[in-house]
Length: 128
Image (cartoon, rainbow, N blue to C red):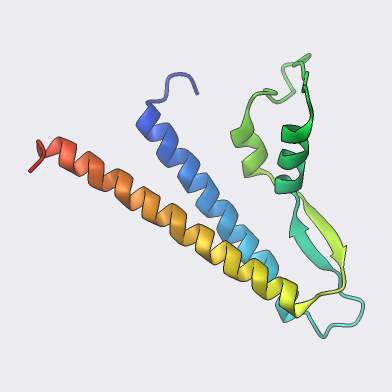
């Protein structure tokens, strides 16, 4: 990823996050759709919890000991492959809050992406 231009990398990271938000929307929608299903257990994407835990630790010392291992410094890889975890019975209020949060975050990322392209367009046009 070292050969990628910073503009492309930023857009790529935003795209990855938008894809993750879309996946999260599907998971929450499935929870709401199954709210009355007996013994259905709500599901969540767990990468955020893993990321928070790793940021809260004082030191993280991962070492790549095999070519088959992932690069320990590759946050993008973690974001692309979230795990599903079961969280218990479906609570409609919790699911609605998650849908709203996800929607706001998705719109924010789209707004930032639009601003980025607008700045690029201005730079290409010479500030006109």
